[in-house]
Length: 353
Image: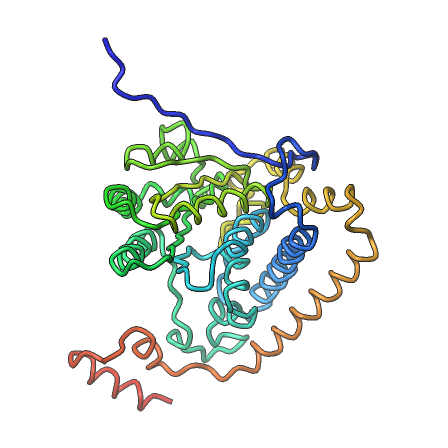
């Protein structure tokens, strides 16, 4: 018997759960201002997230998908992407959204529509797109255009580990590998696809190894280590931009919150499991490292929390005072030229109050 091929999946980590260096700092992380910026954005996400849950619980916003415990992944993605790159996200990438131009008020509106405590909400006021797999195909489409146009741009797509069971995910990876497209697949492996655990999703030892069948590299990274995730993104983006093809990054983290505010995770998760995950969460890890390096202290922490809270309250005020979008917006943002088949519907919606 001869062996045709062998494969390995690497696991990358810079800071362990005790905020100790276990590998050399990448070059960007030697810049203290960049590390502090990463931490500040993660903190902003957490303060925003807490407020979003409160808005939903008080009837001022619709169902909301939290990011608690997963902040490092989206912040690392946004931190390393260039302006002309394209992000095809799932629905939790708030850190990347904020770094790429969305405001917190935009995100509140994304989930809130015109609800805001009113019983006259129009379901079309802010159409919500919650992709579970299709965004990977969108990313490969964008990446194909970049390659054909010979543009040094990269498409980045994010999906949960549960979404990797979708056929769309496999189809997107297959074409990305075959055509060697400039695309980065990021899997937020937060261990739970709503109430379905990771081990019930796939028999594969890792999600990262799924890239091997598509003909490109898959790696695992500690998703609670923002330095490691940022370094992995930096390398994958540079490779794709230079014509080296796609990469799959499996970022291993844990969803400390419910799947959405319509979920109750206590029905299917053990308290001991959640408590253990809190010991590894990303904000405490990077904060402890900054404190140990004498780059951060309690006074700076309190000032940051105050600033973040003020920014969030301003965003809430803006959100609450926004004019609701017209029902025709679902056509306006979808088509450059309205198809004739929808003209009658459009005119009917224009007449609605």
